[in-house]
Length: 340
Image (cartoon, rainbow, N blue to C red; front, side, top):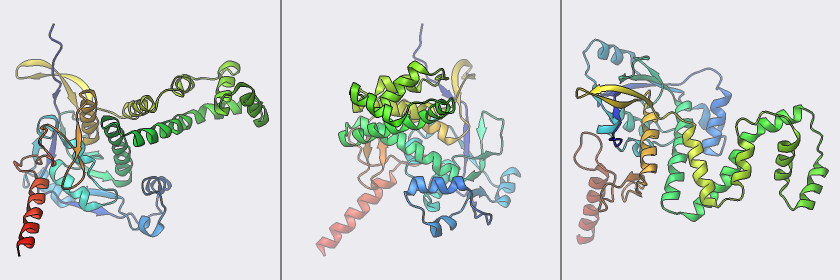
Protein backbone atom coordinates (compact mmCIF):
# COMPACT_ATOMS: atom_id res chain seq x y z
CA UNK A 1 0.00 0.00 0.00
CA UNK A 2 1.31 3.44 -0.89
CA UNK A 3 1.50 5.49 2.31
CA UNK A 4 3.89 8.16 1.02
CA UNK A 5 1.13 10.63 0.18
CA UNK A 6 1.37 14.38 0.43
CA UNK A 7 -1.22 16.45 2.23
CA UNK A 8 -2.86 18.94 -0.12
CA UNK A 9 -3.61 22.41 1.22
CA UNK A 10 -7.30 23.18 0.56
CA UNK A 11 -7.26 26.71 2.01
CA UNK A 12 -6.40 29.77 -0.05
CA UNK A 13 -5.46 33.06 1.61
CA UNK A 14 -6.34 36.44 0.09
CA UNK A 15 -3.66 39.09 -0.33
CA UNK A 16 -3.13 42.33 -2.23
CA UNK A 17 -0.05 44.44 -2.85
CA UNK A 18 -2.24 47.50 -2.43
CA UNK A 19 -3.96 46.43 0.78
CA UNK A 20 -4.66 49.29 3.16
CA UNK A 21 -5.22 48.88 6.85
CA UNK A 22 -5.90 51.24 9.70
CA UNK A 23 -4.10 51.37 13.02
CA UNK A 24 -6.56 51.66 15.93
CA UNK A 25 -5.57 53.23 19.23
CA UNK A 26 -8.27 52.44 21.77
CA UNK A 27 -8.84 55.39 24.16
CA UNK A 28 -10.20 53.08 26.86
CA UNK A 29 -8.22 51.92 29.88
CA UNK A 30 -5.57 49.39 28.75
CA UNK A 31 -6.27 45.73 29.45
CA UNK A 32 -4.22 44.19 32.24
CA UNK A 33 -3.43 41.19 30.02
CA UNK A 34 -1.96 43.52 27.37
CA UNK A 35 0.36 45.03 29.97
CA UNK A 36 1.48 41.53 31.00
CA UNK A 37 2.18 40.61 27.36
CA UNK A 38 4.17 43.80 26.84
CA UNK A 39 6.25 43.16 29.97
CA UNK A 40 6.89 39.50 29.06
CA UNK A 41 8.14 40.42 25.59
CA UNK A 42 10.14 43.56 26.41
CA UNK A 43 11.27 42.61 29.91
CA UNK A 44 10.31 46.11 31.01
CA UNK A 45 7.21 48.15 31.74
CA UNK A 46 7.77 51.51 30.08
CA UNK A 47 4.27 52.92 30.58
CA UNK A 48 4.88 55.86 28.24
CA UNK A 49 5.71 53.54 25.35
CA UNK A 50 2.98 51.07 26.28
CA UNK A 51 0.19 53.67 26.33
CA UNK A 52 1.23 54.94 22.89
CA UNK A 53 0.94 51.51 21.25
CA UNK A 54 -1.96 50.70 18.90
CA UNK A 55 -4.30 47.86 19.87
CA UNK A 56 -5.68 46.75 16.51
CA UNK A 57 -5.04 46.79 12.80
CA UNK A 58 -7.88 46.36 10.35
CA UNK A 59 -8.56 46.70 6.64
CA UNK A 60 -9.99 50.14 5.94
CA UNK A 61 -13.78 49.99 5.61
CA UNK A 62 -13.76 51.80 2.25
CA UNK A 63 -11.13 49.41 0.90
CA UNK A 64 -13.08 46.43 2.24
CA UNK A 65 -16.21 47.67 0.43
CA UNK A 66 -14.19 47.97 -2.78
CA UNK A 67 -13.07 44.36 -2.39
CA UNK A 68 -16.62 43.12 -1.75
CA UNK A 69 -17.97 45.11 -4.69
CA UNK A 70 -15.24 43.76 -6.98
CA UNK A 71 -13.67 47.22 -7.46
CA UNK A 72 -10.36 46.11 -5.94
CA UNK A 73 -8.83 42.76 -6.75
CA UNK A 74 -7.24 40.47 -4.22
CA UNK A 75 -5.25 37.46 -5.39
CA UNK A 76 -5.44 34.09 -3.66
CA UNK A 77 -2.52 31.84 -2.86
CA UNK A 78 -1.94 28.34 -1.52
CA UNK A 79 0.58 28.74 1.36
CA UNK A 80 2.09 25.24 1.21
CA UNK A 81 2.78 25.44 -2.53
CA UNK A 82 3.38 29.15 -3.04
CA UNK A 83 4.80 30.27 0.32
CA UNK A 84 6.96 27.41 1.67
CA UNK A 85 9.08 29.88 3.67
CA UNK A 86 6.14 31.64 5.32
CA UNK A 87 7.14 30.34 8.76
CA UNK A 88 10.59 31.97 8.66
CA UNK A 89 9.12 35.17 7.15
CA UNK A 90 6.59 35.36 10.01
CA UNK A 91 9.45 35.17 12.50
CA UNK A 92 11.04 38.26 10.93
CA UNK A 93 8.25 40.53 12.18
CA UNK A 94 9.56 42.81 14.92
CA UNK A 95 7.57 43.28 18.11
CA UNK A 96 5.44 46.44 18.29
CA UNK A 97 6.68 47.59 14.88
CA UNK A 98 3.88 48.40 12.43
CA UNK A 99 6.24 48.90 9.47
CA UNK A 100 7.64 45.39 9.97
CA UNK A 101 4.11 43.96 10.17
CA UNK A 102 3.05 45.92 7.06
CA UNK A 103 5.77 44.29 4.95
CA UNK A 104 4.54 40.85 5.94
CA UNK A 105 0.87 41.73 5.35
CA UNK A 106 1.69 43.01 1.86
CA UNK A 107 3.12 39.62 0.87
CA UNK A 108 0.99 37.21 2.91
CA UNK A 109 -2.07 39.04 4.39
CA UNK A 110 -3.06 39.73 8.01
CA UNK A 111 -1.83 36.65 9.91
CA UNK A 112 -4.42 36.32 12.67
CA UNK A 113 -7.81 37.58 13.76
CA UNK A 114 -11.38 38.01 12.61
CA UNK A 115 -12.22 36.49 9.23
CA UNK A 116 -14.70 37.72 6.64
CA UNK A 117 -15.60 34.12 5.72
CA UNK A 118 -15.75 32.75 9.25
CA UNK A 119 -17.03 29.23 8.45
CA UNK A 120 -15.21 28.58 5.20
CA UNK A 121 -12.32 26.08 5.28
CA UNK A 122 -11.34 26.94 1.72
CA UNK A 123 -10.71 30.70 1.78
CA UNK A 124 -9.44 33.10 4.41
CA UNK A 125 -9.65 36.89 4.36
CA UNK A 126 -8.70 38.32 7.75
CA UNK A 127 -9.83 41.92 8.16
CA UNK A 128 -9.10 42.76 11.82
CA UNK A 129 -6.38 41.71 14.25
CA UNK A 130 -5.85 42.26 17.98
CA UNK A 131 -2.19 43.33 18.05
CA UNK A 132 -1.40 42.20 21.59
CA UNK A 133 -2.84 38.75 20.99
CA UNK A 134 -0.80 38.63 17.79
CA UNK A 135 2.46 39.63 19.50
CA UNK A 136 1.90 37.05 22.25
CA UNK A 137 1.45 34.31 19.65
CA UNK A 138 4.43 35.61 17.68
CA UNK A 139 6.53 35.48 20.86
CA UNK A 140 5.56 31.84 21.46
CA UNK A 141 6.17 30.90 17.82
CA UNK A 142 9.61 32.54 17.76
CA UNK A 143 10.53 30.64 20.92
CA UNK A 144 9.62 27.31 19.32
CA UNK A 145 11.59 28.22 16.18
CA UNK A 146 14.62 29.34 18.21
CA UNK A 147 14.59 26.16 20.30
CA UNK A 148 14.61 24.08 17.12
CA UNK A 149 17.47 26.18 15.73
CA UNK A 150 19.49 25.66 18.91
CA UNK A 151 18.97 21.90 18.69
CA UNK A 152 19.63 21.75 14.96
CA UNK A 153 22.90 23.69 15.28
CA UNK A 154 23.87 21.89 18.53
CA UNK A 155 24.30 25.20 20.37
CA UNK A 156 25.23 23.84 23.81
CA UNK A 157 24.90 27.20 25.61
CA UNK A 158 21.36 27.83 24.34
CA UNK A 159 20.36 24.20 24.85
CA UNK A 160 21.44 24.47 28.50
CA UNK A 161 19.40 27.68 28.86
CA UNK A 162 16.29 26.12 27.33
CA UNK A 163 16.77 23.03 29.50
CA UNK A 164 16.63 25.19 32.64
CA UNK A 165 13.68 27.12 31.22
CA UNK A 166 11.82 23.86 30.66
CA UNK A 167 12.12 22.94 34.33
CA UNK A 168 10.51 26.27 35.27
CA UNK A 169 7.87 25.63 32.59
CA UNK A 170 6.97 22.27 34.18
CA UNK A 171 6.88 23.80 37.65
CA UNK A 172 4.49 26.47 36.37
CA UNK A 173 2.22 23.76 34.95
CA UNK A 174 2.35 21.95 38.29
CA UNK A 175 1.18 24.96 40.32
CA UNK A 176 -2.56 24.16 40.02
CA UNK A 177 -1.83 20.67 41.35
CA UNK A 178 0.10 22.14 44.28
CA UNK A 179 -2.78 24.52 44.95
CA UNK A 180 -5.30 21.69 44.96
CA UNK A 181 -3.10 19.73 47.31
CA UNK A 182 -2.83 22.64 49.73
CA UNK A 183 -6.58 23.18 49.57
CA UNK A 184 -6.93 19.60 50.82
CA UNK A 185 -5.00 20.70 53.91
CA UNK A 186 -1.76 18.87 53.36
CA UNK A 187 0.34 19.28 56.46
CA UNK A 188 3.90 18.92 55.41
CA UNK A 189 5.85 21.81 56.89
CA UNK A 190 8.88 23.48 55.34
CA UNK A 191 11.08 22.05 58.08
CA UNK A 192 9.85 18.51 57.37
CA UNK A 193 10.54 18.95 53.66
CA UNK A 194 14.08 20.20 54.37
CA UNK A 195 14.71 17.39 56.85
CA UNK A 196 13.52 14.69 54.42
CA UNK A 197 15.58 16.23 51.64
CA UNK A 198 18.65 16.20 53.86
CA UNK A 199 18.11 12.58 54.93
CA UNK A 200 17.40 11.28 51.41
CA UNK A 201 19.80 13.51 49.47
CA UNK A 202 16.92 14.52 47.17
CA UNK A 203 15.94 17.98 46.01
CA UNK A 204 13.21 19.56 48.18
CA UNK A 205 10.86 19.76 45.17
CA UNK A 206 11.33 16.02 44.57
CA UNK A 207 10.52 15.34 48.24
CA UNK A 208 7.26 17.25 47.97
CA UNK A 209 6.31 15.62 44.65
CA UNK A 210 7.02 12.17 46.11
CA UNK A 211 4.78 13.01 49.06
CA UNK A 212 1.96 14.10 46.75
CA UNK A 213 2.35 11.01 44.61
CA UNK A 214 2.24 8.57 47.51
CA UNK A 215 -0.01 10.22 50.09
CA UNK A 216 -2.52 12.51 48.43
CA UNK A 217 -5.54 11.53 46.37
CA UNK A 218 -5.65 14.31 43.75
CA UNK A 219 -6.25 14.39 40.02
CA UNK A 220 -2.93 14.13 38.20
CA UNK A 221 -4.45 13.38 34.81
CA UNK A 222 -2.20 16.01 33.25
CA UNK A 223 0.70 13.67 33.96
CA UNK A 224 2.82 16.60 35.11
CA UNK A 225 4.20 14.81 38.17
CA UNK A 226 5.08 11.74 36.14
CA UNK A 227 6.69 14.02 33.58
CA UNK A 228 8.80 15.67 36.27
CA UNK A 229 10.12 12.33 37.50
CA UNK A 230 10.91 11.11 33.99
CA UNK A 231 12.64 14.26 32.79
CA UNK A 232 14.51 15.68 35.80
CA UNK A 233 17.63 13.51 35.36
CA UNK A 234 17.75 13.60 31.55
CA UNK A 235 20.39 15.46 29.54
CA UNK A 236 19.87 19.13 28.60
CA UNK A 237 19.28 18.05 24.99
CA UNK A 238 16.45 15.67 25.92
CA UNK A 239 14.86 18.28 28.19
CA UNK A 240 15.04 20.85 25.41
CA UNK A 241 13.48 18.44 22.88
CA UNK A 242 10.64 17.79 25.31
CA UNK A 243 10.22 21.55 25.75
CA UNK A 244 9.89 21.99 21.98
CA UNK A 245 7.30 19.24 21.61
CA UNK A 246 5.29 20.61 24.55
CA UNK A 247 5.20 24.08 22.98
CA UNK A 248 4.23 22.79 19.55
CA UNK A 249 1.52 20.51 20.95
CA UNK A 250 -0.17 23.54 22.52
CA UNK A 251 -0.90 25.06 19.10
CA UNK A 252 -3.17 24.24 16.20
CA UNK A 253 -1.43 23.07 13.03
CA UNK A 254 -4.39 22.90 10.68
CA UNK A 255 -7.26 20.45 10.38
CA UNK A 256 -6.87 17.21 8.46
CA UNK A 257 -9.67 16.59 5.95
CA UNK A 258 -10.22 14.71 2.71
CA UNK A 259 -10.88 16.48 -0.58
CA UNK A 260 -11.18 15.78 -4.30
CA UNK A 261 -7.96 17.01 -5.94
CA UNK A 262 -7.31 16.45 -9.67
CA UNK A 263 -10.26 14.05 -9.71
CA UNK A 264 -8.70 11.96 -6.94
CA UNK A 265 -9.69 11.67 -3.27
CA UNK A 266 -6.66 12.93 -1.40
CA UNK A 267 -5.80 13.76 2.22
CA UNK A 268 -5.81 17.49 2.77
CA UNK A 269 -5.30 20.12 5.44
CA UNK A 270 -7.22 23.34 6.03
CA UNK A 271 -6.05 26.36 7.99
CA UNK A 272 -7.86 29.07 9.95
CA UNK A 273 -4.95 31.53 10.00
CA UNK A 274 -1.31 31.91 9.05
CA UNK A 275 -0.02 30.84 12.47
CA UNK A 276 -1.50 27.40 11.83
CA UNK A 277 0.36 27.35 8.50
CA UNK A 278 3.60 28.43 10.21
CA UNK A 279 3.38 25.70 12.87
CA UNK A 280 2.57 23.12 10.20
CA UNK A 281 5.64 24.19 8.21
CA UNK A 282 7.82 24.27 11.34
CA UNK A 283 6.76 20.70 12.20
CA UNK A 284 7.67 19.61 8.67
CA UNK A 285 11.09 21.24 9.11
CA UNK A 286 11.63 19.55 12.48
CA UNK A 287 10.67 16.06 11.33
CA UNK A 288 12.74 16.52 8.17
CA UNK A 289 15.72 17.88 10.15
CA UNK A 290 15.74 20.88 7.82
CA UNK A 291 18.77 23.16 8.09
CA UNK A 292 18.12 26.78 8.98
CA UNK A 293 20.77 29.41 8.37
CA UNK A 294 21.23 33.12 9.16
CA UNK A 295 20.97 35.44 6.17
CA UNK A 296 24.20 37.30 5.35
CA UNK A 297 22.18 40.46 4.77
CA UNK A 298 19.43 40.70 7.39
CA UNK A 299 20.61 38.11 9.96
CA UNK A 300 17.22 36.37 10.07
CA UNK A 301 16.74 32.63 9.70
CA UNK A 302 15.86 31.04 6.38
CA UNK A 303 15.37 27.45 5.22
CA UNK A 304 18.34 26.06 3.29
CA UNK A 305 17.13 24.40 0.08
CA UNK A 306 20.51 24.75 -1.63
CA UNK A 307 23.85 24.51 0.21
CA UNK A 308 25.14 27.48 -1.81
CA UNK A 309 22.36 29.76 -0.57
CA UNK A 310 23.40 32.44 1.94
CA UNK A 311 20.45 34.80 1.68
CA UNK A 312 16.71 34.70 2.34
CA UNK A 313 14.89 33.21 -0.67
CA UNK A 314 12.79 35.39 -2.99
CA UNK A 315 9.38 36.45 -1.71
CA UNK A 316 6.29 34.93 -3.36
CA UNK A 317 5.92 36.06 -6.97
CA UNK A 318 9.52 37.27 -7.24
CA UNK A 319 12.52 35.66 -8.86
CA UNK A 320 15.32 37.51 -7.05
CA UNK A 321 16.06 37.54 -3.34
CA UNK A 322 15.63 41.08 -2.03
CA UNK A 323 18.23 40.35 0.66
CA UNK A 324 20.79 39.17 -1.89
CA UNK A 325 20.06 42.19 -4.08
CA UNK A 326 20.44 44.59 -1.12
CA UNK A 327 23.69 42.91 -0.07
CA UNK A 328 25.13 43.07 -3.61
CA UNK A 329 24.21 46.76 -3.96
CA UNK A 330 25.86 47.54 -0.62
CA UNK A 331 29.04 45.71 -1.64
CA UNK A 332 29.01 47.53 -4.98
CA UNK A 333 28.84 50.92 -3.25
CA UNK A 334 31.69 49.91 -0.94
CA UNK A 335 33.89 48.92 -3.88
CA UNK A 336 33.17 52.21 -5.65
CA UNK A 337 34.00 54.13 -2.47
CA UNK A 338 37.37 52.36 -2.13
CA UNK A 339 38.21 52.93 -5.79
CA UNK A 340 37.51 56.65 -5.55
